[in-house]
Image (cartoon, rainbow, N blue to C red; front, side, top):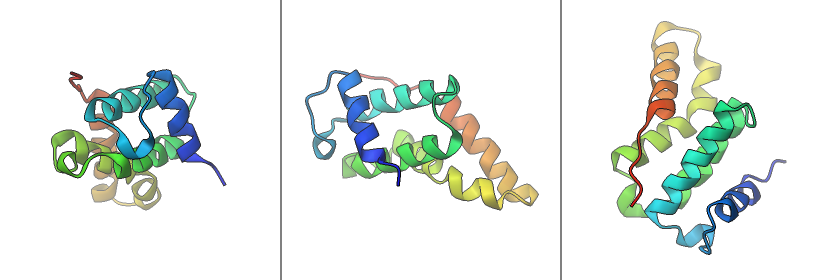
Length: 111
């Protein structure tokens, strides 16, 4: 069993955050997402890990941020591992394609 929570904690150390996973600020969540995405792009994470880390990260964002464009993108990205296995028709293949494109091109403002 992969420990995504442990992996997220290591990302928090990389951004030098002293917060616990339960007390992340919106900026911490965005910074961690950017690191996760960077690691995915540079082949340090596979699609499954990328999606699962986004899923765990999404579950840690403050409730007020869940419905924001960033929160929605993070949730959609978290669902990629489900949809990639269902992409046997044009509709689900389009979901995978548009979700991945959104995650890879998302411009987040920190601060």
